Structure formats: structure tokens, C-alpha cells
Image (cartoon, rainbow, N blue to C red; front, top):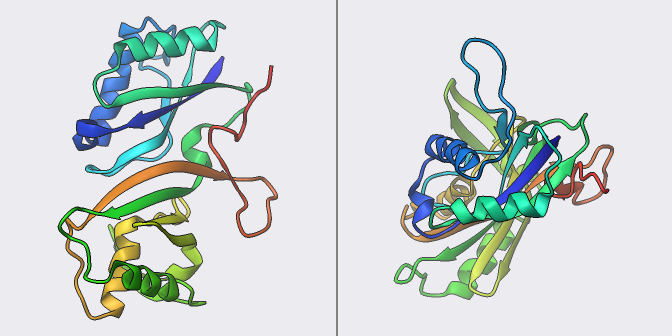
Length: 237
């Protein structure tokens, strides 16, 4: 049976890198006595696939990992046992049963929603004016930038990769392209805005939280053709 686990990462857990999170979840499976399946061969490993790595220092309400289990244990029981073993900052929010033919979460990722707020003491003199300027900047039809990659640099239109951006209260919510096709980060979105103003972004000025990860709806159209990974591929019993 394939299942998709949605978990949150809060507090001091935000300082744990992705590779350590992967190793941590392997230990959780053993401690919670989850009947996870193993690969074959001389060096078997747990069949586990994380959706999208989260940067160090970023909290999250919507991280995903897919696993395969050997039996059809009730999902509620599985969730309870996992949360009993979780360290501070981690919590399983939901577990969804997947159809046998479902592709793994990593290959589905197309976008992610982030919420950004100013760290206390780093607020601009005119927060509302700053928010308005940011919205106006990303209201342009095209924003050409140069993005640094492992292979060098590439030109891209950032405006086409920012699907939503709005100021809400004292924070900014943005939905941006994520995954294998074109992966951008909130830092890149902010840097482009600051550079347009001839300024440099303070790397400690913002608190960032990832709120959800999305996959593209097959054949989906419209301004927001995405569904959360929690709902995408859901198998209703």
C-alpha cells in the first residue's frame, strides 16, 4: 500500500537540513513500528520519497513524503504512532492512501505557497508602501532576470514563474514555480524586487514559511491549475 504523509516543521526543527530530515524519518519508521517496505539487492533501503527539499531556516506547514507499507494498517493508527515518536518541531498532519499506480510526490511538484513576514526590527519605514511597490513590480507582464545555476547562468522571465503574489496584513504570500521544471525560491523573488530599486536585500530581514506544496492538475487550465499534494492522487475508500 502506498501512502502520502503530510508533516509540519516548526521551531528549532527549521535548522535541520534536508538530508538529516531524511535520516530522521527513517528512524521514525523503525521507532513507530511502521511496516515500511524495503528495496531489494545487497543494500536494502526504505522505500521513501520526499516531495521537495526545504531550505534551512524555513518553517513549513506542508511537507510531504511518500512511503510504501506492507500491510493495510488503519491510517489513523499509523499517524498516532508516528506522532508519539516525533521530536520537537515535527508533526504528522495527515496520511493519505494512494492508488497503486500513483507516481511519487517528488515527480508531481509544480508549485509551492510561501508566507513571508519581516523579522522584528527589520521592518521598512513604510511597510504598506513597500508592500504596494512589491505587488506593482510583480504586476508586470515580464521581468527578465539572470539566475545562477550549477552550470553557470540562465536568463528567465520571473513574472511567468510567480503565479500569485499578494500583501496580506503585515506579510506577503506568494505561489511560485517549484520542482524539476523550473525551481525558484522566495529569496530570488525578493532579490529581483530589491535590485529593481537599486538596493540589496538584508539576508536576515524575513521570516519565511512554506504553507503548501502543489502538483499540476492533469489537463488543468485557468489561473491556478494546481492541487495540493494531499489532494492530488487521493484514493477515497
